[in-house]
Length: 437
Image (tube, rainbow, N blue to C red):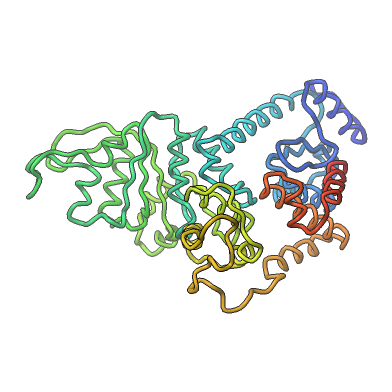
């Protein structure tokens, strides 16, 4: 039976119970990994603390659930909490807390593992939030996944991540739906028997057979013609197929991953994509953020591409860094990779990449202005939330320090140089941030 706890003492009582169970509780939201944040009454000030923490996994627990309005529960998540529990006394909450911490720990390990973290590069909040959700769904469910997003945002890499995290032993079978001709599409998917049509000199397996026990990736699934959409739906529903020219049914079990840069919901509305197939393939949807929404990842991606080109930790002149950070990338990450390759191939000898390595056709006609719209929008949101000028300035400073330290591999000297402060000043600021947290 739940014990009665006075509201004024609820947080202290729960904190003691959690600590007795070996679960640490933070006094205020902290940056970094998982943490538990207790509160009695939700307000704008608490929302600001949670937002400023940028914690990857923050479990908020309300110790006075009667005071929490229904709308406020969503505000807790909107502020950055991963989940919200309501505590009314007793120890029934402990298994819930442990289960969440265990799952978040497992997801965090997978995200930083060699098979995922080394090729899905990025630390920005939109990218990490999307990747965390993808890893959890890929590793702990068998759900079909629909990946949407602009061209060049890494949809194919996410499909590879699903295959690496998939519990099945099969391989990743890729079908580019843009290359399927009406005449041969059936053979590509279903396979055919010898003599099934002119030119079928021998039997062959199709994509469904190759994907059996593994992952089938349909790239640009929005390009499938309606007749093939109906046939694909039948295979998904019945988990079996027939080769062209055969009467025999073959079992087929695969995890389906689809990708498209089309708005399939709009395609369904206009009759270009089957609604029943859409809801089959979109059991879980992942939208890749465009590069303009994850600008903090540009420099880490640049270093990643340089390593792929065979160069380890090549420095960038300030002008080159500024150029790469402020350039527009309509082709997203793919265009950034191509830009880095063009600059690298013009580079001569040792030393950093210099402004002369930028090809003439890529050089800007004029320097972009700063502060830009993205910065103004961020400040505007803070003002709308009622943040004071001191809080806004402190948050901007803390965020800048956090991002530069991530980009410089926690090297205090290089980070201080980029921020235009002394090593000692940066050390003091980091110490002050740690004490405040």
